[in-house]
Every structure is written in C-alpha cells, then in structure tokens.
Length: 239
Image (cartoon, rainbow, N blue to C red):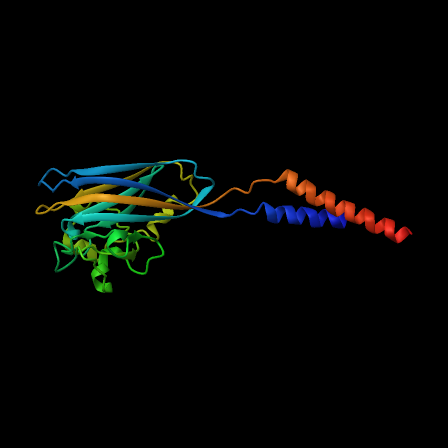
C-alpha cells in the first residue's frame, strides 16, 4: 500500500509543477521627448501598471517604438520596485564620435521587425552600428539587442569615457526574483540639443515562474483510485 501511495504522491507533485507564464503590458504614449537645453536636463516618464502577475520574475523584455530624433542623444531607463536597468545611454558615442549614431529612432512591429531589449540579445545596443543593424522604412533600428547597461549620468561623461566605461551584465536581470506587479516606469531623456523624437509606445513583457498550486481534490482522487486498484488486486489473489 505504501508503494502505491508513494506513486500517487509523485503524480501529485508532477500535477503541481510550476509553469512559466508570459504577460505583456503596453503604453500608447505619443509624447515628444523634450530637446536638451544646456544646463537644464528634462525628460519624460511613461508608466504602466502591472497586475495579476502570478509568481516571481524570471525574464523581462522591453519593446520600443521611438520615432525621430537622433539616436545618439537618447538616454532611456526602465524602473520597477526600486530597481533600474539602463536601456540606452547615448548609442554610438565614443572616441571619434561625440554625437553618436544619427539614425532616427527605434522601430515598431508594424513597420518590420520590432525593437526589443533583451539580455539574450547578441550585441550591446550601444555599439549596434558595428553589427549591421536592420532599419525599417522610417529609418528606425529594429531587432533584438542587449540593453546598454552603462549606469552613469551621460551629462557627466566625455565621449572617450564610453570606450572603457563598465556596463552591467544582463541589465534586465536586476528584476528577476521579484513580483511583476506594480508600476513599471520607462524614463526617456534627450541629452544633446538639435532634434526631437516621439515616444510612440512601449511594452514590458514579463516571464514568471508561478508558485506551484496544490491540487488536493485531484491528488486525493489519484490516491483513492490507486488504493481501490490495490484492494481489487488483493481480492482477486485471495480467490
């Protein structure tokens, strides 16, 4: 009998195995990111509120549609629950390129591939120009890229500083293990004057591992069926 109960409990454990859930929260923003005014940095914060997210975060990805402007001007971060990941920090800025890349934004899914920040991306987005990026018809960068991860105020840096500036590995993993519920804030700032872009929309995609939920009625049924089967086998043997 103990053997059958053990089998039943093992089946119950399998039935209660955690599964990964993927949820996505989006913001249609549409605001212009203010152009930089020397001595007066200004940006905008866009907020989405996540709810009914079960379990703890295993992975975060960010989808972005930023139209226009000059990509080398942009500084973007994602914040949640007291943690921050730097998505962009003046892409392309370095020795010999004080203004960074001149492409005009980061592209939406509606005009080719989406622009995705993911720790599993093949290339650091700060140097995307060295990886033959695909631009959509509007001149926006598309594809999947590692977030910048250089958590330093860009207004305090010289272009050459970017050549050796350390970056956080797997920047979006800072959210792993937390609850996905609550406010997610995308902060966008233009840190060099001359052009403006529009934060059209963005999304945060959260992959979680849900806490295994017990299934007492189902498990009880499994054990009862196995017990009944054992009793039937014993009766048949006694005949």
